[in-house]
Image (cartoon, rainbow, N blue to C red):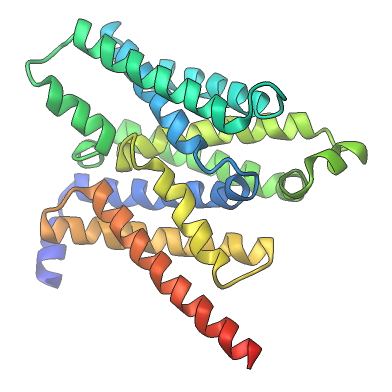
Length: 282
């Protein structure tokens, strides 16, 4: 097994996949705790559908670098979803459903109308499930991922206390003078950046797993915001590395394998949480 891994790691695309996988797992888990606590767990799913629609438009326009269109469109959609979540007429879950379903339908319609290849079903499958895209990264995309990941992590650490306050009680934070709307805007921008990056790893339909599972797993054992966030990051990175290595050895789809490892991690932490609670009661 080790000889096989050593052989595979001689290829640059495998090293690129591992680097990008670790960075995306780290960034998504940083935001996962905040999104779960704010009841926006499915914002990743909604924004990934928006990104899918934007990618379809970029392909129809023959853009060589679809990031130039996908990232701004996803950022704007994230802002709209978070703003709509504060609207009494359109609640957060309804806003996510409206935007995500609409974007997914329009994206698929555009891909059919402006098909660039004879294997449309294969193109859609790769985009939705990330079957091979993580293994076809070039240096430019890896560098872009590194830069965006560093920026996301830096912003989260810089505004950690503000994000903590907005997460637990946005109304009270605003009443004390904290500019909650600005920090919601910051959250929207970095969420969108992470979603666009994660599409290369697990595809549009599995992104929510990277956001939700590590955070929920950590919450089974830990109670403080800081401890849950740290545990979530470590677990997410470990699951991403294991998932990529297993997919290489077993020949399984990368995204689905990572999500399967995340599910196994959640079950293990849930069991550990039950044991800890029983020990505490006794």
